[in-house]
Length: 359
Image (cartoon, rainbow, N blue to C red; front, side, top):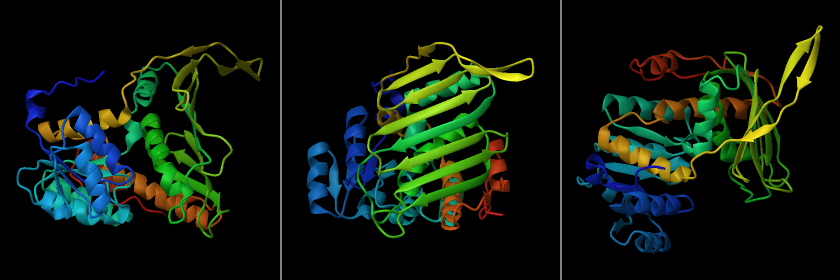
């Protein structure tokens, strides 16, 4: 469990939140519980009224610039519509704030790169809200992989399915798949070199309700992401297949299981080896609690967040490649590890305009 007591560094940190809509109100509630909210801005009067109820000690504004330009605010968490992310984050960085942006970082990959470059140039924190990277079960699964418990990772499959809210302006790939992409990148620990995506729109024209994305990684591992809001039941399952063992995480049932199962060879033939499944305990703390505290600590210490700007750039480029593949009826899109991402991984400076691109 995290330490809810304020550390000496954390106590003086003042955080403002832009947006009290669908996800913004969850961020405000969580931040108010685990730390505090100093200021909130939202152009909608009803949202501002709700913000005042959730965080009664916070100063509530209509104009986000009032929060951004407040010299007493150390960090800004942006939970506004994605098309506003670039402008608001850019203003906040230039105003000397540490910045959190809910996923996606921006809509356009070039704008995401520009934000990452700007944050680096001004020595500001830029953190992206890839929530599942703070999920205790995912963190535990990563520990199992790093310890060698599963052996060599061969294949990862992630299903995110439900008969839920149907979007008409954003397809299922952009709405759901960013979560799964970030998890695959973290668990596999390599960069994808090719993406193939197919999908179908059955409710609104040209808006995919169902997509299947396949990723080939530089180390030979493959990933498979199936997302849909047109499904008879809710399923959020992740399966990791290793050379020694397998693991599965059911986010609906909140169960992480280590399976003593694999395939061995005997006399030239592959033989399935089936063993028992062992439940693996993990911390019950909410991922959003951990994510909010991670940002507060990054603001307090000036530390680099787990999901930084370049992570946002990488995910966005994969999404764009997947979208292009889907528009071309599943044509493979090659991804090249850019100089910027190699530098990022090796701790070298990032230079503007160095993007992952489709070949």
